[in-house]
Amino acid sequence: GGIITQTPKFLIGQEGQKLTLKCQQNFNHDTMYWYRQDSGKGLRLIYYSITENDLQKGDLSEGYDASREKKSSFSLTVTSAQKNEMAVFLCASSIAGAPAEQFFGPGTRLTVL
Amino acid sequence: GDSVIQMQGQVTLSENDFLFINCTYSTTGYPTLFWYVQYSGEGPQLLLQVTTANNKGSSRGFEATYDKGTTSFHLQKTSVQEIDSAVYYCAMRDNTNTGKLTFGDGTVLTVKP
Image (cartoon, rainbow over all chains, first blue to last red; front, side, top):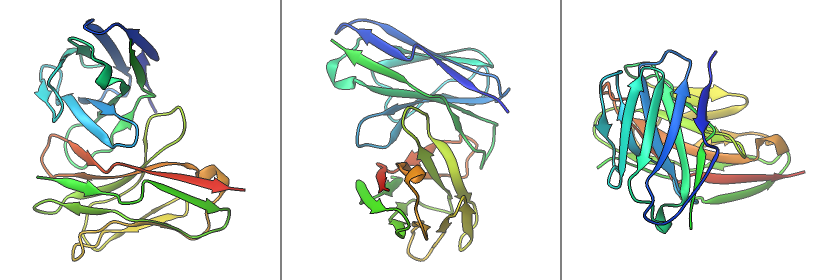
């Protein structure tokens, strides 16, 4: 088994501030993902990384940057926080290739003041 | 583009009631279909998946059949319990190596004792 750790659990920032969310996994998975979860909506993909040196934009990448520092870690940066992007941000990982199951972390809840 | 539709935003049942959550999908080709469950304060976790059309997936008393004809993957359970209260997401994955999932908006299930 393994676990995905997301830090911090709660993140509060000011409008316009640059904020970074971190994710670590010990599954030894190749592929990692960042999703945004808005209340009453499904999960939307922000960025993903198929292997350690890869970075791909998802459907919601505008306003975000991501960095795959090493195989086990994947960070997401909100470049300029806005009130309309208060949401829960979920990190996930999987082995490479279809149709692998994605394992999710518990999420980081972002509040913008 | 790809889409997953869950029309029921909220479902409220009593214990031992029959559960039916509607899910339809739109894509080209033959995707892999999933149901994920998210308990309060946790990330989503895989409930069941089906990779082949006309096959049925089952787990913990839940069932879903991949119906290629109607492009549906409805979730059913004969007798729900209070511990089944959670958010249920239908999701679809194409057969490329990206592993990208497209999620429905989710259905909040509340089971009253």
